[in-house]
Image (cartoon, rainbow, N blue to C red; front, side):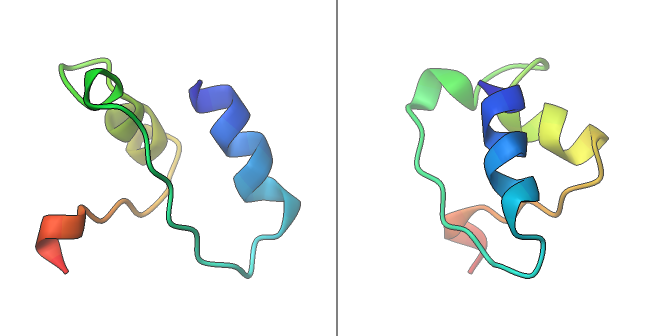
Length: 49
């Protein structure tokens, strides 16, 4: 799923995206959040806004 999100994000680098995924994709050390941050993306949790 991370690869598909990265394709979307790379289509237009000057955009801000709101991406909603199920909780299971966010939990654990190998989560989508961790993978995106490792690839250099800024990830902000909704509860941090």
